[in-house]
Amino acid sequence: MSVTDIPFDSDQINDPNTLRAIIEIDRGPRPEAASFAPPQWAGAYGAVLWGQGDVLRLWGAGCAKSDDILRAFAVARLLECRQGDAKLIVHSKGLEGILGHVSVSKGFKAGGKTPFEGFGFLKPIQDARGRGEWGLVPVKARVGEPEGYHLAVRESKSGLRVALKMLPVISTIAAKHCDPLNFIEATDADPNPDGLMGHLEAARG
Image 1 (cartoon, helix red, strand yellow):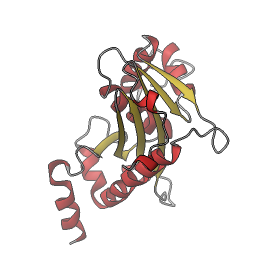
Image 2 (cartoon, helix red, strand yellow):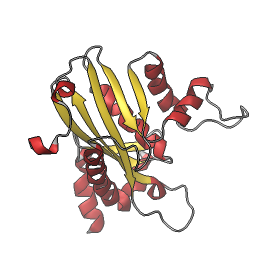
Image 3 (cartoon, one colour):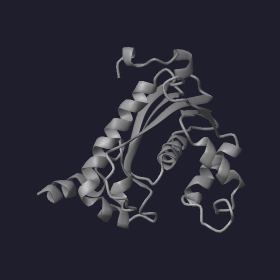
Protein backbone atom coordinates (compact mmCIF):
# COMPACT_ATOMS: atom_id res chain seq x y z
CA MET A 1 0.00 0.00 0.00
CA SER A 2 1.48 3.35 -0.98
CA VAL A 3 1.64 6.27 1.42
CA THR A 4 -0.96 8.13 -0.63
CA ASP A 5 -3.42 5.27 -0.05
CA ILE A 6 -3.16 5.64 3.72
CA PRO A 7 -5.50 8.40 4.95
CA PHE A 8 -4.84 7.85 8.65
CA ASP A 9 -2.96 10.05 11.07
CA SER A 10 0.56 8.75 11.74
CA ASP A 11 0.03 9.13 15.48
CA GLN A 12 -2.96 6.80 15.27
CA ILE A 13 -1.04 4.30 13.17
CA ASN A 14 1.76 4.22 15.75
CA ASP A 15 -0.51 4.28 18.81
CA PRO A 16 0.58 1.25 20.91
CA ASN A 17 -2.59 1.21 23.02
CA THR A 18 -5.42 1.67 20.53
CA LEU A 19 -6.40 -0.11 17.33
CA ARG A 20 -8.94 1.47 15.02
CA ALA A 21 -10.90 -0.29 12.29
CA ILE A 22 -13.54 0.30 9.65
CA ILE A 23 -15.85 -2.50 8.47
CA GLU A 24 -17.93 -2.81 5.32
CA ILE A 25 -19.79 -5.77 3.82
CA ASP A 26 -20.87 -6.71 0.30
CA ARG A 27 -23.21 -9.26 -1.20
CA GLY A 28 -23.82 -10.59 -4.67
CA PRO A 29 -27.15 -10.75 -6.48
CA ARG A 30 -29.74 -12.81 -4.60
CA PRO A 31 -31.60 -15.61 -6.41
CA GLU A 32 -35.16 -14.62 -7.30
CA ALA A 33 -36.75 -17.57 -5.53
CA ALA A 34 -37.05 -17.20 -1.77
CA SER A 35 -34.76 -19.75 -0.20
CA PHE A 36 -32.76 -20.48 2.90
CA ALA A 37 -30.12 -22.36 0.92
CA PRO A 38 -26.57 -21.04 1.28
CA PRO A 39 -26.37 -19.40 -2.18
CA GLN A 40 -29.11 -17.02 -1.04
CA TRP A 41 -26.81 -15.57 1.60
CA ALA A 42 -23.32 -15.50 0.03
CA GLY A 43 -21.35 -12.42 1.01
CA ALA A 44 -18.13 -10.95 2.32
CA TYR A 45 -16.71 -8.48 4.80
CA GLY A 46 -13.86 -6.08 4.31
CA ALA A 47 -11.96 -4.18 6.97
CA VAL A 48 -9.02 -1.87 7.40
CA LEU A 49 -7.21 -1.88 10.75
CA TRP A 50 -4.61 0.59 11.89
CA GLY A 51 -2.56 1.04 15.06
CA GLN A 52 0.39 -0.51 16.90
CA GLY A 53 2.63 0.57 14.02
CA ASP A 54 0.76 -1.10 11.18
CA VAL A 55 -2.09 -0.78 8.69
CA LEU A 56 -3.80 -4.03 7.71
CA ARG A 57 -6.44 -4.75 5.09
CA LEU A 58 -8.60 -7.81 5.71
CA TRP A 59 -11.44 -9.67 4.01
CA GLY A 60 -13.48 -12.79 4.54
CA ALA A 61 -15.83 -14.63 2.17
CA GLY A 62 -18.63 -17.02 3.02
CA CYS A 63 -22.29 -17.03 3.88
CA ALA A 64 -24.53 -15.28 6.43
CA LYS A 65 -28.26 -14.87 6.88
CA SER A 66 -27.91 -11.26 8.00
CA ASP A 67 -25.61 -8.36 7.24
CA ASP A 68 -24.87 -7.99 10.95
CA ILE A 69 -23.61 -11.58 11.13
CA LEU A 70 -21.13 -10.72 8.37
CA ARG A 71 -20.08 -7.64 10.33
CA ALA A 72 -19.71 -9.74 13.48
CA PHE A 73 -17.40 -12.13 11.61
CA ALA A 74 -15.25 -9.09 10.84
CA VAL A 75 -15.21 -8.00 14.49
CA ALA A 76 -14.16 -11.50 15.57
CA ARG A 77 -11.29 -11.37 13.08
CA LEU A 78 -10.24 -7.92 14.27
CA LEU A 79 -10.23 -9.07 17.89
CA GLU A 80 -7.80 -11.81 16.89
CA CYS A 81 -5.45 -9.08 15.67
CA ARG A 82 -5.29 -7.36 19.08
CA GLN A 83 -1.95 -7.50 20.82
CA GLY A 84 -1.73 -7.15 24.56
CA ASP A 85 -4.37 -4.95 26.18
CA ALA A 86 -4.88 -2.64 23.21
CA LYS A 87 -8.41 -1.25 22.92
CA LEU A 88 -10.10 -1.85 19.57
CA ILE A 89 -12.42 0.86 18.21
CA VAL A 90 -14.62 -0.34 15.35
CA HIS A 91 -16.43 1.98 12.95
CA SER A 92 -19.33 0.09 11.36
CA LYS A 93 -22.86 0.34 10.12
CA GLY A 94 -25.33 -1.87 11.96
CA LEU A 95 -24.34 -4.19 14.84
CA GLU A 96 -25.70 -2.02 17.66
CA GLY A 97 -29.20 -3.51 17.58
CA ILE A 98 -28.25 -7.17 17.35
CA LEU A 99 -25.49 -6.90 19.99
CA GLY A 100 -27.80 -4.98 22.29
CA HIS A 101 -30.31 -7.80 22.06
CA VAL A 102 -27.61 -10.39 22.71
CA SER A 103 -26.61 -8.55 25.89
CA VAL A 104 -30.09 -9.00 27.40
CA SER A 105 -31.06 -12.25 25.71
CA LYS A 106 -30.67 -15.75 27.07
CA GLY A 107 -30.48 -17.23 23.59
CA PHE A 108 -34.05 -16.55 22.51
CA LYS A 109 -35.77 -13.87 20.47
CA ALA A 110 -38.37 -11.54 21.99
CA GLY A 111 -41.07 -13.67 23.56
CA GLY A 112 -38.60 -16.23 24.86
CA LYS A 113 -39.64 -19.15 22.64
CA THR A 114 -37.80 -18.85 19.32
CA PRO A 115 -34.04 -19.58 19.41
CA PHE A 116 -31.86 -16.58 18.60
CA GLU A 117 -29.87 -17.53 15.49
CA GLY A 118 -26.16 -16.95 15.88
CA PHE A 119 -26.40 -16.35 19.64
CA GLY A 120 -23.53 -18.72 20.46
CA PHE A 121 -21.26 -16.89 18.01
CA LEU A 122 -22.39 -13.37 18.91
CA LYS A 123 -22.32 -13.66 22.71
CA PRO A 124 -18.51 -13.87 23.09
CA ILE A 125 -18.21 -10.80 20.85
CA GLN A 126 -20.70 -8.86 22.98
CA ASP A 127 -19.03 -10.14 26.17
CA ALA A 128 -15.67 -8.82 24.91
CA ARG A 129 -17.38 -5.49 24.29
CA GLY A 130 -18.78 -5.54 27.81
CA ARG A 131 -15.27 -6.10 29.18
CA GLY A 132 -14.07 -3.02 27.31
CA GLU A 133 -11.87 -4.90 24.84
CA TRP A 134 -13.54 -3.16 21.93
CA GLY A 135 -16.00 -0.38 21.29
CA LEU A 136 -18.44 0.36 18.46
CA VAL A 137 -18.70 3.71 16.67
CA PRO A 138 -21.92 3.62 14.58
CA VAL A 139 -21.55 4.80 10.98
CA LYS A 140 -24.38 6.32 8.97
CA ALA A 141 -24.45 5.51 5.27
CA ARG A 142 -23.15 8.25 2.99
CA VAL A 143 -23.17 11.07 5.55
CA GLY A 144 -21.04 9.54 8.29
CA GLU A 145 -18.56 7.33 6.49
CA PRO A 146 -15.12 7.91 8.07
CA GLU A 147 -11.85 8.68 6.36
CA GLY A 148 -10.50 5.42 4.97
CA TYR A 149 -13.92 3.91 4.40
CA HIS A 150 -13.05 3.35 0.73
CA LEU A 151 -10.31 0.92 1.78
CA ALA A 152 -12.81 -1.25 3.66
CA VAL A 153 -15.13 -1.14 0.63
CA ARG A 154 -12.27 -2.27 -1.61
CA GLU A 155 -11.53 -5.23 0.65
CA SER A 156 -15.18 -6.26 0.86
CA LYS A 157 -15.29 -6.38 -2.92
CA SER A 158 -12.15 -8.54 -2.93
CA GLY A 159 -13.91 -10.96 -0.59
CA LEU A 160 -17.11 -10.89 -2.61
CA ARG A 161 -15.27 -11.98 -5.74
CA VAL A 162 -14.18 -15.10 -3.87
CA ALA A 163 -17.65 -15.64 -2.39
CA LEU A 164 -19.25 -15.52 -5.84
CA LYS A 165 -16.72 -18.04 -7.17
CA MET A 166 -17.87 -20.37 -4.39
CA LEU A 167 -21.51 -20.39 -5.49
CA PRO A 168 -21.35 -23.60 -7.58
CA VAL A 169 -20.14 -25.60 -4.57
CA ILE A 170 -21.25 -23.48 -1.63
CA SER A 171 -23.88 -25.98 -0.47
CA THR A 172 -21.13 -28.62 -0.22
CA ILE A 173 -18.90 -26.19 1.63
CA ALA A 174 -21.74 -25.26 3.99
CA ALA A 175 -22.37 -28.86 4.98
CA LYS A 176 -19.02 -29.10 6.77
CA HIS A 177 -19.73 -26.11 9.03
CA CYS A 178 -21.53 -26.32 12.38
CA ASP A 179 -23.84 -23.54 11.20
CA PRO A 180 -24.33 -24.12 7.46
CA LEU A 181 -26.02 -20.75 6.95
CA ASN A 182 -23.44 -18.59 8.73
CA PHE A 183 -19.76 -19.18 8.06
CA ILE A 184 -16.57 -17.69 6.63
CA GLU A 185 -14.76 -20.11 4.34
CA ALA A 186 -11.89 -18.07 2.89
CA THR A 187 -9.94 -15.02 4.04
CA ASP A 188 -7.10 -12.86 2.78
CA ALA A 189 -4.84 -14.92 5.07
CA ASP A 190 -6.13 -18.23 3.67
CA PRO A 191 -7.72 -17.60 0.26
CA ASN A 192 -7.48 -21.23 -0.86
CA PRO A 193 -8.53 -23.40 2.12
CA ASP A 194 -8.28 -27.13 1.46
CA GLY A 195 -7.61 -26.48 -2.21
CA LEU A 196 -10.91 -24.63 -2.61
CA MET A 197 -9.94 -22.99 -5.88
CA GLY A 198 -9.11 -26.38 -7.41
CA HIS A 199 -12.57 -27.65 -6.44
CA LEU A 200 -14.14 -24.57 -8.00
CA GLU A 201 -12.21 -25.07 -11.22
CA ALA A 202 -13.36 -28.71 -11.30
CA ALA A 203 -16.95 -27.62 -10.71
CA ARG A 204 -16.76 -25.28 -13.68
CA GLY A 205 -15.09 -28.14 -15.54
